[in-house]
Length: 182
Image (cartoon, rainbow, N blue to C red; front, top):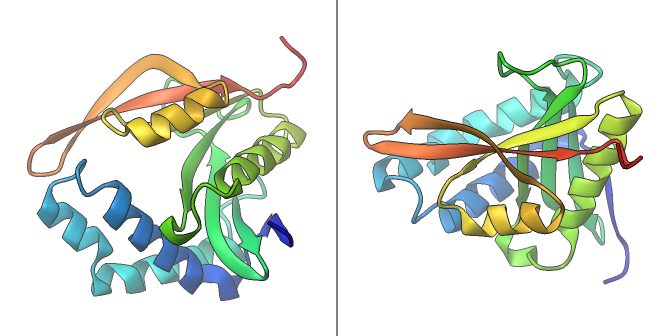
């Protein structure tokens, strides 16, 4: 595929990012989340809120170490990644970052966009002095776990249960991003 890449998101990308999030969640999480919860977080009201939140993330991130990146193909936003310092109490945010979101539009999947977003995130975070990158994934999300596993990620032994009207377990995955083999 020609004319593809990753770049920092702009405020004007917020609608595309939110639309991708909703489409990806509807497809990818339909068997992982209770239907009512999925309807609430992907409905029209939620979509408007997500558009506002992503516009703020692009225009006014909480710190210079927080970033929103978009994958583009022929000038069309086809995926996004958001990352920043880890917020879990057991981690050092000076050296551990969190991949908060990594989603590719289901209409543009399996074209390398997720891998490009992941690599760009790791490169930027490494430049910012981070050594480790973590993310939370639904325990039953085999697609995400397989994708991240193929890139060297593994569970770190930490799990949490979200109350979504029924318990939904997540596991924390991690990877070393130093790139020097240490």
